[in-house]
Amino acid sequence: MIFKVFFQENFKEVPVREYTEAIYVEAESEADVRRKLAPRKYNIEFITPISGAFLEYEENKEDFKVESL
Image 1 (cartoon, rainbow, N blue to C red):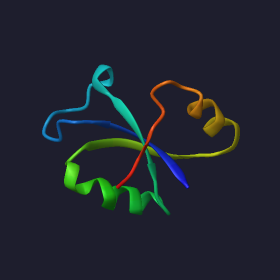
Image 2: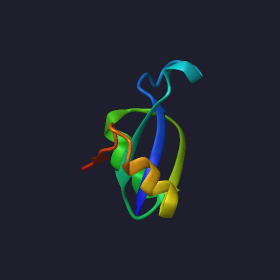
Image 3: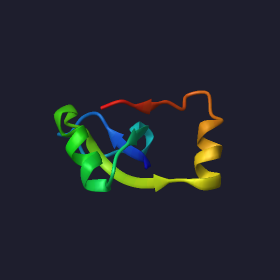
Image 4: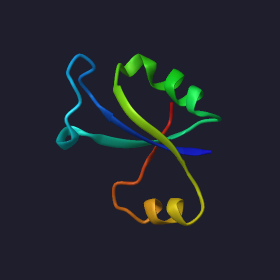
């Protein structure tokens, strides 16, 4: 399953919407995503599974790349 993860790189600061980034991660569950990203110390705002038409839409974006963790 592919998850879209919204995060900010600085874990110690309060999240500011303008600095939010997104990555795509292949994992079995949301907990698995968090475990895989833990070493990166991201300030994770939101994780959502993507599939179907939404996944198709995301795959058509130039910056679509699934992180291999």
